[in-house]
Length: 396
Image (cartoon, rainbow, N blue to C red; front, side, top):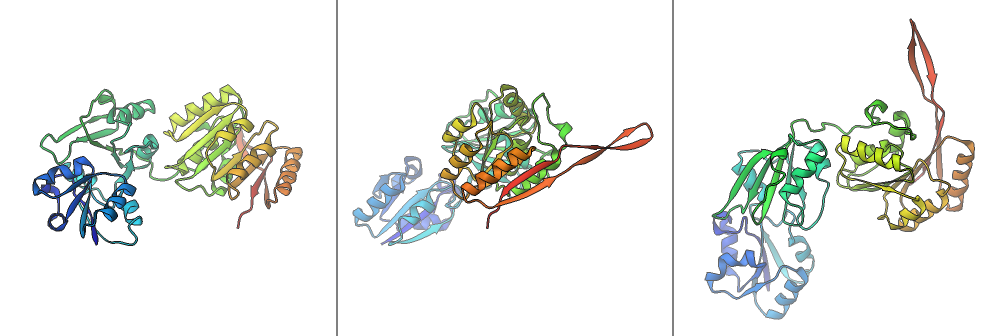
């Protein structure tokens, strides 16, 4: 038995490779979602309409066919079910046959290069729309779930990015193919028909990841804020990956949350504070810096963290007296989580050491004193900030 897993391009013979067409002709049976198999019904071959990998494998093994063709939209390597399917066909000979993916087709229609494009799938799931657009000159969104082209445009406007150029492609490869071009602010009520994709162009994209952002750039209030020198040390020390889930406990103005969010472009920062003003400031700063991957939550941290997703890294800038409980819950969710705590008093430092010992964590303690200069008349005077202890979990 042999199974061809075929990328059929945009869904019609004219966007398929000759190799793909030949494999379809060889097959005893055609398998795929209705939209995939519809163009080939006139071949007179048996057809099994199905997109779920487990059901496809069951059918292949029970059908007794010698050669099956499983039809996938676009290309087998672009947000495709081909990988999952092949993993379930370990005892059957399989062959991937590539197709034309939607971004390749769409950007060729726009006469634009796609090699420098960032790709985000919103097909049946959510993603960090604004963060992706801010971080890249071109971002291609594969739609098809609950998130529509209009939703993306509205969100960009909510975060002050309404002047971003947007290109919407609908029913690509079909007779009713349609391409719409405009600014995000012009397309917030746009209603796309059927399957669609979207490309954004942001000439003012972030060319580098900001770290140690000047304090003056944040919206400030009466709640405490981690200063930039400390913040830079904390965030870099956490070694945040672009897909990480981060907790910022006692988020204050959200300055650490923002810098975490800039690092975890595809991840999420859960910012927690019991102070309503702090949460409001965190939301405001998340919008200012284009961080739609920050989830700001008001309430008691020790209770809230019970419901948060498994953390990759945790920063505690204020615990409301619940530090041990917060750390314990974090460790129960992920024993290997990266952890950093800041302390301004010797009592808090002592508490941290005691908690680290209790949970058998090795501490790496640094004390930072920052002194800045300010002009008084013709003289440059020194102005010292309070010294801060940074307690970091030492990992192997």
